[in-house]
Image (tube, rainbow, N blue to C red; front, top):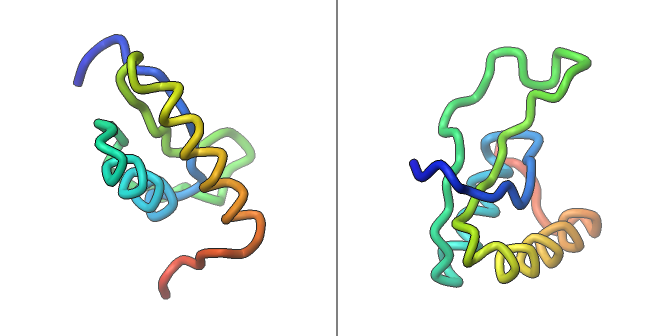
Length: 82
């Protein structure tokens, strides 16, 4: 993984990170996420999020997609599969 990645979003779960990663990849943006769920996700007071990172040259385009993703999320546009 390149050292100069830019964090464009911190997802609450790995599922959410993968949803966003799919959207970014559809726009030809190379995405890097930590591919592991912590057994403590949701059980601790500290930040246990899953960072979604991109290459610096793709950060602005990624942020536009992140904004759309967040708007859809706040409207209840997707649900985690059970």
